[in-house]
Figure 1 (cartoon, helix red, strand yellow):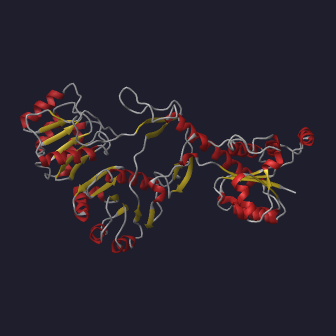
Figure 2 (cartoon, rainbow, N blue to C red):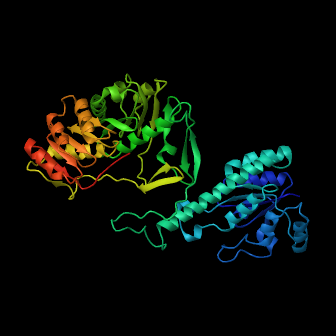
Figure 3 (cartoon, rainbow, N blue to C red):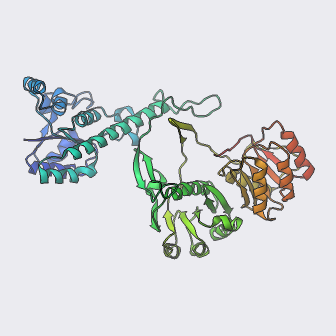
Length: 510
């Protein structure tokens, strides 16, 4: 008679699985709440305590840690030495283990570090040539159907289940490792370094699972997919796609950039992104007007772009957007008429999503490993912001400087943003020298920046940047400062009557 051991925290579907196995003549072993649920359904089950001769002890910390359990899982019944040991110690083989673990990731703590569960999973997975191991309730039906049709699980199924089992325990250990690294004494938040930043861990244990196959990678000849860290969810996992083709790698990459930036603004805002850089950003009390202003900033670049809106999309915005070729529109919701208008465009991907949460680490790949840093945070005006020129910003200029600073931090370096009345008018991105970025921003603003402001993600190495900005009509500048030639830039601003604010914080983005 084949034997199955069922011990699960999440009891979804376990009674139905037990019922199916029992009907097929399997002997069932279980313990604790799982045994109680199976018994309550009128199904014969043997308590593990009866098998081992030991009750659950140490507040349920020790239940299945016993040779009769692990011997039954690890035994190779084709090995005479193993068989002799089994006979000598009264060990019976266990053919199937169904386990899911304490939910450590949802509520980290010492008592939710599962020991018996992972131990059984690893024992069964190691011996997968003989033993089936199931850690995902979604596999219950597949496993039961295969046993019904074939009498046992195939070698391929057992191997696949073993891979999933080891992935589950690896992810579990990863979550525990990260928790211990972040909370070294178990009593508080991560320690801070001398600069007040969270220190990076000595080791970084990551495990990710396939979350979403993508239409293709960065180019059509490349495969692409979105993975998520095991045990974690992101706004992508709960986003709803209402219409349009499948997403590609760059659709996801650019939409991520647009959605993060638009959610930095408390007021109604629209961001348009092309190739990971904003090409249009505007804030306005009327969200439809915000879209028109964002699009007007650079309508050429907006063609084929990503539109992110931080308010529900009304019909008027959808009508304005519909004639423009757009890859993706993402918003918290849509009026019925707006959704109907947008989903009528078969190639437009229409997403609704919750705001993107902040992330702790920024991770990129390099040959043989990873580059890791604390994620950049972009603060608004604070006491650290200092006016260093004779001219002082007006109230409107202060508002525009804060707006442009937020936008600039989302632009690839070297980054320059011209803005006026909470509308980006010219964006210079990704240039090897800063003055070229200023020139690009001036060209794209096309004379509309007169009386406007400029934001720079890093200091000005030479005063030529100020001279070009002055020619474009810029009247206030925000920049980090820190160059050995800062005084040259300040002197240039004073000559042109430009107000300059120094923040003390750089926001390079590569």
